[in-house]
Image 1: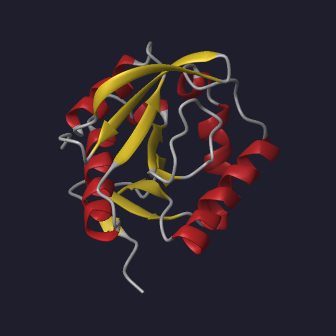
Image 2: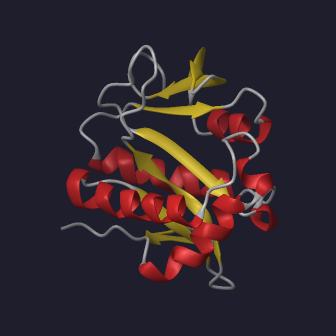
Length: 176
């Protein structure tokens, strides 16, 4: 078994724990965090999200990490890879989808780019395929900038759950 904890200059990316549940709920209930994703999540939805994250690691060997600020030990967000079997046309297939979310107090400090880069380095070492995608609402300029810095390219406009979304790719097909 390989180590699943990642350290960067300012962050620790570690697997989620039961103790993260309250922080998870606060993150996904924050209007600023979800304004481009959907309505704030209920406690029940957050519980399901936490279980999905843990289940991804158990079943697929990848998933999301809790992002912890080294200096304070504070939970500042999440980053990772998923396979949510989204009903989007065309289908994403078996390509891992990358996602990230940070608490408002941690936004604008480069934490998202730092965490995404660290997660991508992990993925490059552990995935058979070096391709990944991400889905971002076209109005979410901050996440689009993070994706661009991370090498996600070739934006394709789609509709997901009756909302506009942009699908970006990183990896194969000439995209680095």
